[in-house]
Image: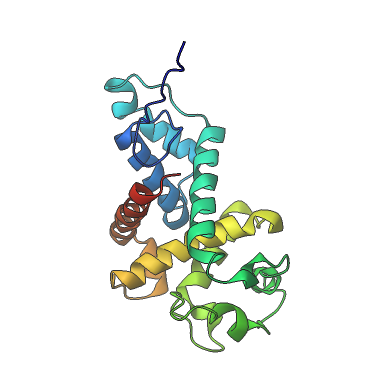
Length: 208
């Protein structure tokens, strides 16, 4: 008897049970977690009052399931847009100095030029010797305070999310008054949905 063919529920993630609208919500919450500090429990509360139950009667995703989706998205960004372009990011200690800078254990990065200028146009709005004033640093530092520090072995996943958001902001020329204004509600939603649209365009070509 032939095996029943699996029909994807959405075009962005092959094995997901979520439909397209639901996966849009997951992608949006992935970026809002960074900008608005929305927790994964907050996302579950949000879905309880939307189409997830009222229209589709979809069983709400667990906190662990949401986390797995977030990790898959970050891993996708890491593999497709970061490490494949420069093998230096594969080094085990590639981010050690950046993490120490976030934790205020140091005030400079010795391999700054080699690491963060390794791409032609690395999208972090950073100038030499002013990395702590960058959007990249602001997002990583804010996130570190919320989760009380990064696990070094998975820091690259957090870095990937920040990288993608900064890249979208630069690509689309999204304007903001200061690095802190990206956390304002209206601006954060503008950035979030711009990131979702950009991510969807890539996932249509090569889904998770």
